[in-house]
Image (cartoon, rainbow, N blue to C red; front, top):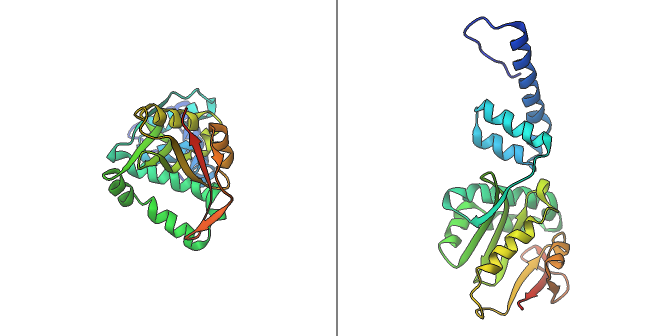
Length: 219
């Protein structure tokens, strides 16, 4: 049970107020955060025991505030958040379609150390952020292949996928590539279709990973 330590006399009304606030926090910790799929979880893990910040996040979350999404290149100090987001969304929607080997291979691929190595190589990483918190993740390999594309569960169907993809398209040098390819998960096919991708083959499996090859033709 969360407790509040006081170093002086506090009126009953003030105490009741703080007790109510801590009850709200405890409810979120017990009933929401451990589902690992909402922004509150990431934020609590980041802000630690900054209770004022926690209350702001909880209240803004409950109020359904409008997000101010910013898409930019991934920074090294955000890699763990990037990997964590991808893993949570993968476990929720994609992993069930993979074999045990496929799940292991994927988790190895998104390991922060592996992400850092690819960042220093031929991959480009983008993130969508809301007030500094990573809510969307995109990896492009060799300038024309999407290898990771995930958006937080609570933020899907809000055009964040499109914002990420269009930012990537805007960075492409004219005439440098003619198409963008992806091996879509079963769950992700509709998302890619909405972005303009088309199937280039039927469902396939490789190394325990089930996917649908798709491509987007540049105009």
